[in-house]
Image (cartoon, rainbow, N blue to C red):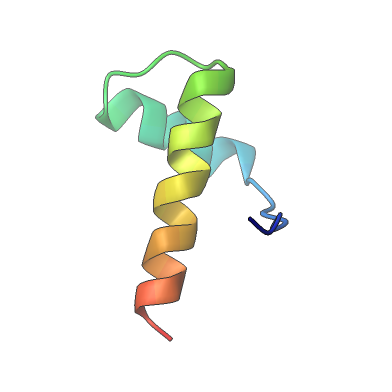
Length: 44
């Protein structure tokens, strides 16, 4: 397992939470980052 750094833009994250009916908490941040990194990996 390798740790990756992912910067979160607060307004982008808040908008994602609203679109996905998610609370602003560590679990949601983890899911958001996972999806963001997966999308980035898929575009490479």
